[in-house]
Image 1 (cartoon, rainbow, N blue to C red):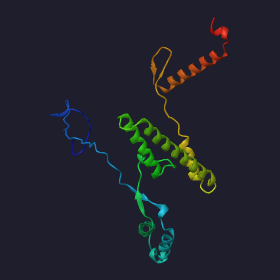
Image 2 (spheres, helix red, strand yellow; image 1 turned 120 degrees about the vertical axis):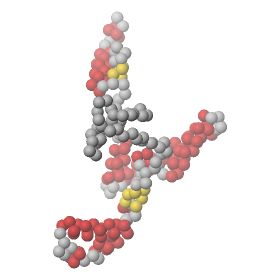
Image 3 (cartoon, rainbow, N blue to C red; image 1 turned 60 degrees about the horizontal axis):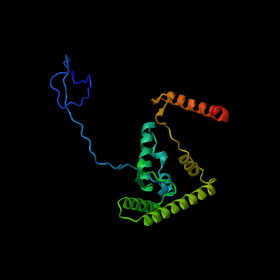
Image 4 (cartoon, one colour; image 1 turned 30 degrees about the horizontal axis):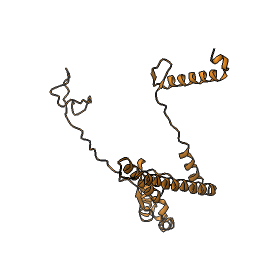
Length: 226
């Protein structure tokens, strides 16, 4: 550091560094970054508009004499006053809920009963692998869970198709979840046996394979076996 300003930032995995770095006259600061292995759950909250009382919200904002409240105020002051009343009404009328993380995503057809069935299936699978559950019991548990999952999927799809005109957003969200595709292709092996990792090289390997496949299909039995 020089005159209170940091000029360079160098990160190293060495435990101790003494003196200056090379011929530089910069001062060195040593510190440690501690990382906890315990999983931290998100405590972020979001507004729950499904349980909101919009009638009371509209009534609270309608009671305010805006002409007198904003009289002689500039744009910035008017906005702050309006924002304050808006947040007060929001706090009274719109409850909050814990925001779900990425790992908390569930399919549209999943409910608490199915979660219990899936949990039982996993426990039965673990017990069967450890020799604590018989194969017949494990098979019956898997069949029961699979049957209920199929039934739940069929019911949710019937409901979505029936209410598509009134709730298009829910329908297309379900369709988009079904259309998710793999974004990346793993490493491929070319004709010489080497692995290719670049996208351009992968496309060339696939195109060469398709060309050979077309040639192979177009050849007759006599040409294939001279």
